[in-house]
Image 1 (tube, helix red, strand yellow):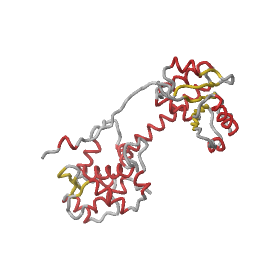
Image 2: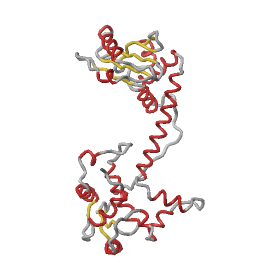
Image 3: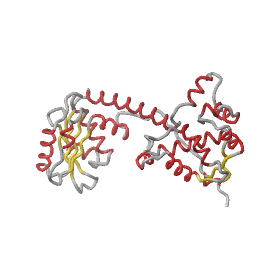
Image 4: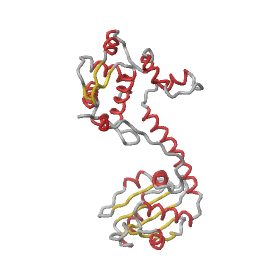
Length: 305
């Protein structure tokens, strides 16, 4: 199990207690060994995919200890214990966490920096003692917002007219790089007669290969089973295609998902949830409300020979 960043504070401080300088990467590796993390746990990424969870938590443990004055960074990405850090270890604390660090004036100054007078003390403490790092909290908040948006989008799509649904799927596929232009894709794909679309599109702008597409605008409870997928694969040959995309606003049964064609045919199944996520990624039916940039120190900029 990956320890939270506050559980890493005391072990990290003990690691540097020999007064030697440690590289940040070495601290990560030594702590991973101490906590007996598996390769999977060691590499498990944040929801954003930008960094490993463990690396991120070690980074915040290091940051909090540095803000409290218990460790220092004499050189780029290098850390050493301070006299205050050594004195703290002599007190033999059972645990060092954000609440414990509040005894140090430098940490209190860091915590309250940028806070308004309207923010109460209790709110400040509750934000400090969370088991997750700020990036993890930000990632989770983003995923909740994205999930809510995806649910709203899917509900809208299910209520669309067949003609509007056809245009939506064509626009999405073109933005994903298929079908050439919207005009070309619109000519190739037509209505299937069952509130969906049915046809072929170019795999790329040059039309070096074709992809057979079916899309079903079905209610959530009307799941797509293996027979539908079997018929879909059979239809590929009739269309002269070896690749297919089957889109539904509902979902697929386990048997449908497990179905694998025996020939060289390759198919991709996109259910309602995945469809909504693609719509978000390619700005179909949604717009950017606000953008945040998460920045970090550029250590190379401050490096002196």
